[in-house]
Image (cartoon, rainbow, N blue to C red):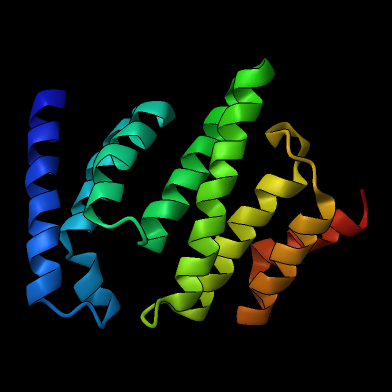
Amino acid sequence: RMGKLDEAAQWMVKAQGASIKNWSYETAEAKSRAPVAQIVVMAKTFVDQGDLAKGARFLEDYGLKADPNEWWVLNSLGFWLRDHGASLSGSRSKEVCHKSASYYQRACKAVIDDPTAGASERAQVHNDCGVLFHYPQYHIEDLAKGVEHYKKALEFDPNYLDALENLGLCMNP
């Protein structure tokens, strides 16, 4: 199965390159049909089978090649690596969580720059990033940075439930 997915993803990378020149991604619906979106779906098959590391590697190999600045590719990488890092131990766990942080920070910038991203999507990305900094199992433990991301999420969507709850948890450590 992996061989076929690799081949399919290679074609999607080529299609993404061609489509950027010939297609407008000015709406969320158009973006959902983009070849890079199909690559994310392919990578998610591994995640759905419980292999976060394989899903992340697939997305790094193909999703970033198709579009290195797409916020939902970067956020997915941050999310999958965050949870994968938490399942590891020792220095490897810390290393994977720090790699997750770099993807999350890129996603935070990219989602703000994307005119098709809605307020709740912007809030979600910042909330997801805040979780990485706030919760101790991710080995970064920067409560102030977590709070900063939760507050940023609430600037975009003042009723974003996860950010409200996480901010409340931060205020009562």
